[in-house]
Length: 114
Image (cartoon, rainbow, N blue to C red; front, side):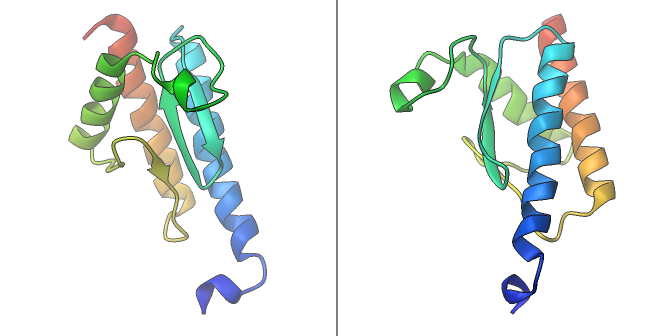
């Protein structure tokens, strides 16, 4: 029933776009070669300087950095799938702010090599 309400999908895309774009901005701030790929409600980060145009392009991504990013997020309370970030209507503006701060912190650690 929730998904049938007017504006629901627009809200889901707004939440996801804020997270996706914030993750990409944090990677740039920390000087990391990263591509944030996917639609706003379902996306992920791949540590590579190559554009992600198909599945094969994902295979050149730095798997160690991806694992470190996933583990760092989990240690700080952000649960994400191994290869995707899924956005939910349950996410509030405060959740997005907190998640973006965690993304920034984890990416900073990766950039410093810690």
